[in-house]
Structure formats: C-alpha cells, structure tokens
Length: 195
Image 1: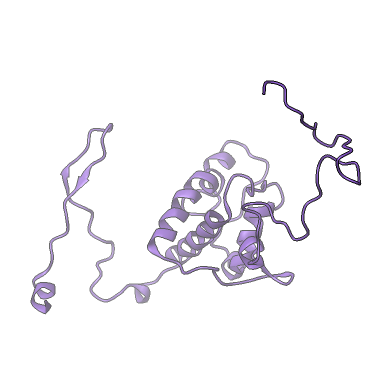
Image 2: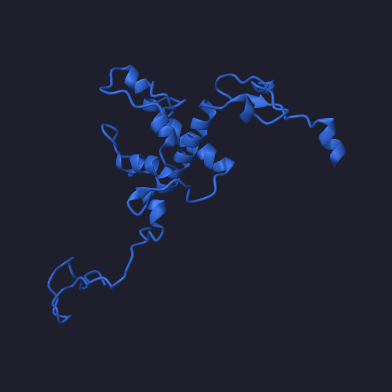
C-alpha cells in the first residue's frame, strides 16, 4: 500500500486509447462557483450598455453592507461623503477622483459604477479580485443613497421627521475601548394607542 501505481499530471498512459492520463472535461462542465447565468449580475450591462437597475432588492442590510465596503475600499480616495477629497488625494495623488455629486455621475446608470469597480477606470485600479460581486452591487446601492443624501431638500424629508435628527441618547458613553450603549427609543403614546 505504501507504493501505489499513479499517473503524474499530463503524463502518458497506455490505459486510454488517446494515451493521456488526464481526461478531458465533459462538455458543458462548469467549475464550482463559476456558473454565471445572470450576465447582468456579473457585468452590470444589458448587451453592451450599462443597465440602470439593481439585480436584487435594496434593503437596509444591503445599504449597511454597501456603506461598510465603501468605507473600506472607496472612501480612502473618494471620501466618506463621495466628494473626491479623500485621504489619498490629499497626500499628493496624481489625480483627484471625481465627486459622485456632479451631474454626469448623478445621471450615470448603476451598471456604470459596477463596471468601474469591476474593471477600473483611468488611474483607478479594478477591484474585481478584492470585492465579491454582491458586495460591488451593495456599494453601488450605497452610492445611490449617498448621492440622494447630498442633494436632498426639505421636500424629501417625511412629515414629522426632525431635521437634523435628534442625536441618540447613551446609557453608557463608552471608554474608547468599548462602544457606547444606546438607550432604546421610547414609543410615543400615539403608537401605543393604535395597538
């Protein structure tokens, strides 16, 4: 059992008629994780043009994940508010990235941003190997929310919402090593009466 007959990869074998030890893949074989039936999800394009819809519903979790990924991968250059004044350009980077709030990028379809994240643009490198496909779309969703937040008017604020919103109240402020704990919101009398 210690010494078993075996074949080195791509070596000659007399067992098969074509004399190859490695067998050809069965036609139509797809490697695990490589099935890409939804081309829009993986390219952001419909045909050759960028599409302007999200391939899945945008939820609070999607936006939170998008913000998290944006702050990690995009904010160093584009800044947390998306104005292009991030840390890297402030240290002498060759070209300042554009603001996401200019008219051209506000009108750009969602698939355009996905394509730029995937393939890069100008001096921006591609992030296809660092950011999974779903996270790229989460970033695109967050970018849209960021664009809306920076150009919002009072008409966009729901009735009864205070602007600016009240800051959260903390039961413990936190020490720097620990996070502050937020007091739960009190239900108003009107919401309790409805029940």
